[in-house]
Image (cartoon, rainbow, N blue to C red; front, side, top):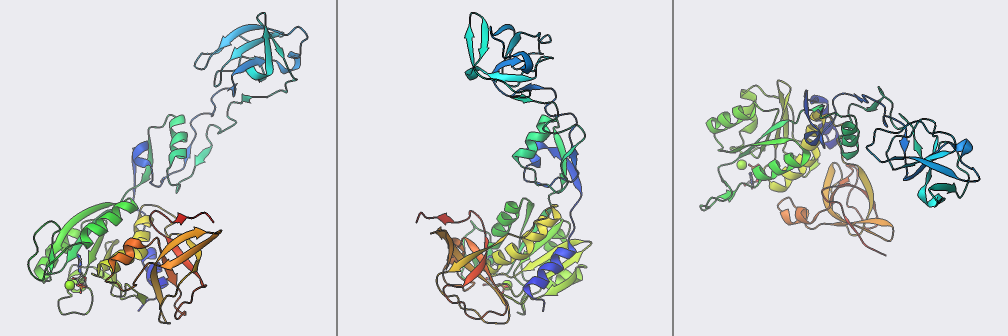
Length: 404
Ligand code: AMP
Ligand code: MG
């Protein structure tokens, strides 16, 4: 049985980024750039003013009688005639600097008298001028492949007049719930039945990652029903099932997947919770068979499926950062395997503190609802005492910061 880390590296070694597609800047946001993007021209495209003020020739601007105002250059104007010595041009931010001018003196630093401007202080060459190409040079690869497109990247693309960029494709992820006890949420419950919460939950998690969920609904615990639904799911870029993967006599998911040509890379992981989980491949597409218990489904998705989908989308940072936090209460744990504990986090007195988010049994959704993160407790640890520094993956919206 693979350890937590071994299972994760088996999965990450098995999946590859999907192909690229060209999408609009807005659709590219949050996705990973598939190629380097170079500047098509200098930014800025010409020398221009960084301030509202007067464009001057710095060497002759400190003239006793001041400078005659020779032109007015607002932003958007095509520019002005070359600046004659002894004159200044009134210029606004972003407007082209006239030839001959090499500095801009802000309005606050001049006196205006009888149509002439008198400087209050010396001006140095280059002051308040944005030089052509000083930001980004034409041809420079300003944004590298592998970058996650955010507002700053979009700013560069738009400034370079690009309407679309190549990004890695989003995987289409088929999601199947399995079990004779399941009824679709919204439908009435007969005795012994429960509503399918894993299907919608996994779909939500897939969406949060930025991939595209395809809901296949519910398969019954019969070979026929599983064959039909799993066969459908194997047409997607990835398949995520829940339940039917332990040792019960109705647990047929692995058997039917094998029949459909899925080669299993492992079954069962030495982690608590999340042990009964299988992973396989068919034609390079990953197949995740997650445990059915809703909390285990969510945790195994977070630890194993999320990083794989991120890698398929071209992301290089696929694991959440681990942040150290000081445990405030005790956590029960058996030595020998990694254990995942749901914790609440709070930042106070300059330290990050963690509390158990509640009963750690996998039946307790309430604990997951209250959690800010998942503590990854090393295999060799036994019970964890208050005051221990633990590693926590911060999930979702982060944690509260309390003033001291
Ligand atoms: P199994 O792995 O099939 O034995 O399922 C483990 C537990 O998870 C059982 O209590 C199931 O009723 C429950 N379960 C399985 N699938 C779902 C689901 N889609 N939504 C909610 N609970 C589920
Ligand atoms: Mg079942």
